[in-house]
Length: 559
Image (spheres, rainbow, N blue to C red):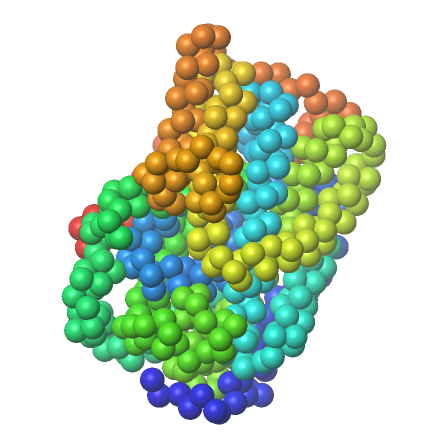
């Protein structure tokens, strides 16, 4: 590596670039917030969003700071197999969501994906969905804070107190413009920030690519160090640590599917589309960016492993020495003046785009699906708009409570453990609810079995006392997600065999009243009949073409 670690990590030019690339975007978001007057504006942008803007926002929300930092750490350890979560899991999930799961939600004027679960399975499933999403997505915001801290600590060379102060400042700024403008401000800023993020990612990728002499040079370095390690890192079809490549791949695919389908940050954007064609077309734009960005960002971990084969060799302070440090180290040591500023601007843009997305999403879920549904059922629209706004700082700043655990347990490991135990069972509920005739009461039974197993396996891995031991094969991290998924499905099917099956396409009548019913009536728009003509069929064929590319890359190029 060429960098002088004693030199200043950031110059005045770098900081000017950070401010110029992020400041105007935030100012525009605050200016556009004046267009937000009703809950429909705040939660769904008045259903006015075009497909290209939603697609850019989907990408910006997906590629947060953790994708730059934590995913590089994951490929540092696991290699190209980690591409599967995005290329197969998220991409397939977006297509299933846009062309199946979300359509009845959109057509009925629902605000959240949890509302759909009540119509399909009952109010208990709706509430459980909100609780899982709050737990799951707030962990992501904690991961963003931790990744930002690692970046500032390593790239800028700051002491922990100063780094954490700036991390908190980023969260506060995102909170302010999200409170003011809601989804419209969030999607607008995401679309612009996605350009900064992609440019920064492409630049640092090019610099590190040159440092390792391309893919062949990287492979040669890894092979020279350890041929077995090189095979494990560069081929997704090889086993890792004695665990089958197919099991690891399926577990990663489920994590990606769960992100795309269960995660309301994705649904919320699609529900703000101005038409069904825009809704479906958005995942094509997001998918193209996802395929390219996954290779650019996650290859950083592989190239970092070629430069630093041993984790102990990473030149970082002892308190941040982990695989998650590899991306900040590469930025610090490879990028020169000006380019460091571009990279940090990209990291900050990624943080803003996900803080605002998750903050607005969880606020919407808690406001509509808990507060208005169970606690305060019939107040004026402005009351719920105010509640949604003020819940935003609670969920964003409250996510910092996860940071100590994330620093101890690692970012990706903590995330996958959470997904496998809690989110994958909910994924099974959404899929069976949308595509099968399972009984309306089967979801609770399925979640009790699936989440129950997931939590038990999680505790068993941590060595909790007084538990009946699980076989190693059932408590392995790569097995938890697939087992929880399968057990949830089996429980729902068994329950339906006893209780009966619903009519095809059955969806119950909502019991909502008061503001919930009025707001849905106000936002619902008449959907023009789809003709199936070329102008409306393009999102499906384009989406399948993007998926075909992802399948080729996974099972031919990198398998």
